[in-house]
Amino acid sequence: MDNTLFVGGIVPMTTVDYPDHISAVIFLQGCPWRCVYCHNPHLQSILPTESLPWEDILELLKERICFIEAVVLSGGEPLAQNALPMAIADLKRMGYLIGLHTAGSVPSMLARVIPLVNWIGFDVKHLFSEYHLITGVKNSGEIARKSLEMVISSNVDFEVRITLHSSLETPLLMDLFRELADMGVKIIALQKCRDKNEFAVEHPIFSDRLVLEDVSKYFDNFYIR
Ligand code: SF4
Image (cartoon, rainbow, N blue to C red; front, side, top):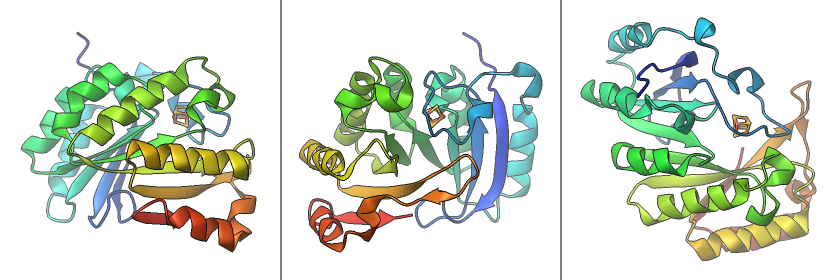
């Protein structure tokens, strides 16, 4: 098995990527999907010549160990890399809490790393039957559902994040909220979609107080970023 980790970048310190803890975020290369609103398209392919050496990342994190409590693996799609369990093991040996940002596109890798992580931010793209409208991949909804079910039935803390693309109209969004609540999701974060110039695109739900109040009844914690 290839044990090289392909790293696209690192944010050495952030307060917003792991709940209640200062963290570093490592962006891994590679993703099997092609979401219409992807903000890291440069990370969709694995480009070995542009990868940062893993040893350098570990060295940087050793220097920061007094300031950072958690390391979040993000992407791209972290589950797309065979070396992910090795990387998590390296970080756990250093004493870090481990966060994972994922869309669940590789359930077999998710099953391997769930016992190793402390928190998951899980991206849900659309109604599972309509996933292809966002990802461009025919069976991506079935795959995402399987992964989310795995997360829900684990003991790992998690939140579901939804980026409000214009194709996710309010009635569809309400159906999605009901579906997620029925599956057992307790925490939802809604994220504004950004256009190609990085301007936030307003979704009608943000100005519909009654709908927002209704949605908040489905979940223990519901917030907007
Ligand atoms: S799953 Fe994430 S990284 Fe992959 S294409 Fe979609 S938004 Fe981009």
